Length: 253
Length: 347
Image (cartoon, rainbow over all chains, first blue to last red):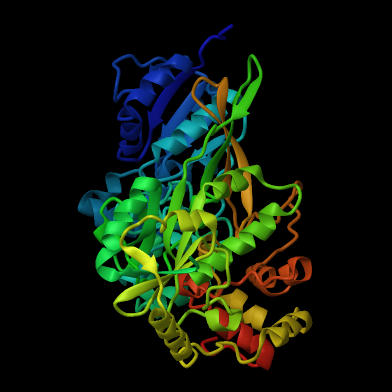
């Protein structure tokens, strides 16, 4: 007794569409998924753009007044709204804009045309509408996406990991980046990616955002110990993190 | 035969032989550290190594272990793994063998843990005795785990041109019996072994500033000691210290549905008392708030609670927690500071 498949739509705001690309590149998993859901709107893989949907995957940050109206419309239609990727979940790299006065940011990017640009601070979706599920990462990690999809279909909450990337990294028995004289944001970054970057020889850039209760001053001690200067530390943290200054607040500013 | 001798030139031949008997795991170089890995090429097995990133624990208590297969409709459950394979752990340090003994105590306490015991049953341990310190992080002399104290099938000691092999079980004996190039150790070999052990006494010195009785006492008195504030302030709660510990056995259990949404697997996954949510319960109450309390708990789970409960210290002196801590929280310094009433060196 198969119930009717939930209709799923994909939308994007300010982003690179890379998280949707992860989805589109899923391979066999995507075929399996279409057994469970009906994709009605996903411009990377189909030409139809259905407006009748129950589940909305939304990529990207909110950066204009018209974005606010549009996301509110999507929220009204969707029974379930999922923030897909760092831009939607934490404002991601778009959040860097928030560290400068808006006028300065505009003139840096648009020069003498800055006056014609209508933009506001970069916001993650949950600052504007209610978000039911968060999928962190830049880009999203497909095994986690599938976990979230299953939770959506079973109408269960997704237990977002609230521990550091180090935990997964150690289970994967990687050599610590600090052992190799590289700085790494693993100790304060939310896990769930199975230490994807470090497994592949890179370091952690903190794209999944900070754990709920990051030990920012202890992490600062570590980075200082490994020879980073305060402004370099700030740069490492700022790439993805805490553009609204809610978590480590004054400590790094 | 109680002691056998193996010429070094025959080691690789013997490793090939072991490989033919069961799946063989040995330490292997990974970047600038070491890891236990299945032996593909016997040349890669390292006998001289700094304790591996994670202990061989992963083979008898895997990071993520399938427990149960289930279907929802019609409801059915079955063991996830019907039969386990025989395996040999080669070149295990005595500290890690002590770790296995600790895990035995924990998992054999009623109700016994069948998953652990099923794997353990298939395991053969071939140890290697350290004749010098691996690095400066170890505290094996204080824990008295720098010398073999049972818990293995075979124990190798490097006496120069040969390995002396202590045969400690029938399982172990089967791997050296009828092997043409492994001979019973002669009187001369045994004399060299005695000499090597004697020499070792001058190399390994207790790392703590006092004996274990005093350590146990210090933990009894030191629950509110300021050292825990120092440690907590520096800790980032990354969980490295517990992930690499050979005696940490906490785990979480999760059910994972496959995409049919009608069947799935039940897993257990390593868990850590250093995680923010570890001691949180429904309603959000947290029984161990703060990194200082969680670090203190970790130490007490090594030096006080298991001594009361099992009459055994759950620190093996392997030094992994100090080695893996990028904040530089050092076990020997912490324990010494607790005893001396002093402050941590780099606090």
